[in-house]
Structure formats: C-alpha cells, structure tokens
Length: 134
Image (cartoon, rainbow, N blue to C red):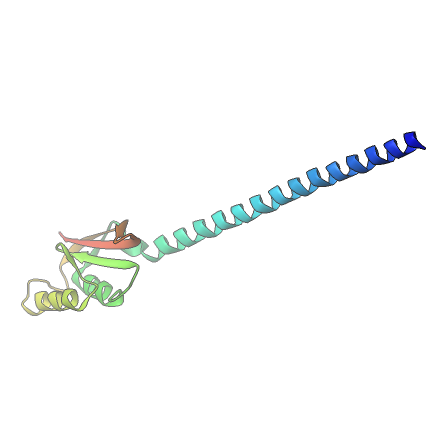
C-alpha cells in the first residue's frame, strides 16, 4: 500500500506541476496577445493622427489655407498652429492673423511652406503645424 500511495502522490504532483506550467504558458500568451493588440492600436492611432495633418506636412499652401487652418484648430488641445513665431491657437493669435490680413501684410494668395511635427508643450505631446512665408 505504501508503494501505491507514493506512486499516487508522485502522479498527483506531476499533474499539478504540469497544470502550473500549462497555465503559466497560457497566461504569457494571453498577455503577449494583449500587448500586440495595444501596439497595433497605437500604430493605427499614430497613422490616423498624422494622416489627418498630411495636407500640411511639407507642402505649399496659400494664405487662405493658413487662415482656415488657424480657425479650424482654434483652442485645440493637441494641435498648435504657428506662424511667424507666434501661437495662433488662442484669441491673441487669431486676432494677430486677422490684423495681418486687414493691413495687407498677409494676402490670401500668398504662398507658404507648412510643416508638421510632434513637439512637447508643458509635458504634453502635441502636433505643431508651422507656416513659413515663401
């Protein structure tokens, strides 16, 4: 009876260890699947975010496009529109831009070079669209 008991205990311990190993492998695969899913979602978000600004990335646009961009992203939390060293995402920036239009310094038919880049403002990653007169 003692030998049978030892075999049964050995078999039970073997099954228990096998179950631990199998559940550990399943847990690891489950976590890897979740990690890869998060990476895929992040890649999709980044692609979508940059795709949204593709028309401003290293392109030639008009003064009208600049004004429209400033108005579109007015008070936007994750986008900063820059022209001539000024942030146009607030009331002062929009007023400055309108003054340039009103006094003829900026014309709707003027040509500008625009660039898009990711920058950090006050610890937050934002998309900056910068315009330079050509």
